[in-house]
Length: 352
Image (tube, rainbow, N blue to C red; front, side, top):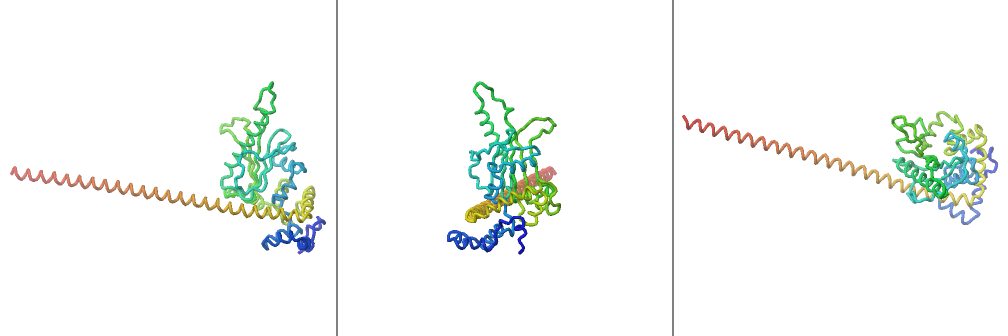
């Protein structure tokens, strides 16, 4: 197979070179042989340029989009997304008390503070939740509270705290596989949410959300191609087809440096194999958790259906009991009327 990417990235090694590095190292060879045939081929494909690297793999994304070492990349992406100039001034820890271990299908979670004080939480998930809004609202509330506490702690005792010092918080979620709700709007792949009044009254409410279903973006990309730098960014994040990678760097040459960075990472075969093994482990774990969640939802649906049927049966039984009761009343009344008529006839007979 012709390796088109090697023409652009000469540091990419051949399949034979990669396999030799693995087979001559006892530890690496043991790790490699633990993988399935499909997993082995996937690893060899992206390390040899047969396919592009999967930027959404946790270890690639954290290296390529690290806001501490290459802040200009995340700044560029967020500037386009937020439609304002963004400069990352610091990276905030995201190990707060919000939701310590939710057993989510999370790839990466980065919290950054921008130059105007705004906080952005960039998160990528493998599979969209059935109801992502609730979880995002909890994250957003936590980000807002953390900002409030931080600003409050920085205020000198002689100064007065002002709520106007608190800036907007953005929760930005990229779904690798989105939930059914998004597919009702399959011509849109960037959804902005914020709180608004139903009367038109303007007030600065601070919590904002951006949802990006990358699977829907892919469908649009195949139909429309790369029409903007925002499209190029999203394609960079989710496309591993060499043809598309070439289109990206031809349309926007600045992306070539990021792909070079990725293939430089691939030169450290030991590190990449270790990270890939962790990725596979997390994928397996998350797939099981997702299946459990799906099964639980199905169980809940079935319980609801059974409960509904039980309620219907009870209602039918109640209606039948009422009908029987009414029929008994009608029968008793008819008997009473018949008795009364008999008495009347007997009285008439006696008078004669």
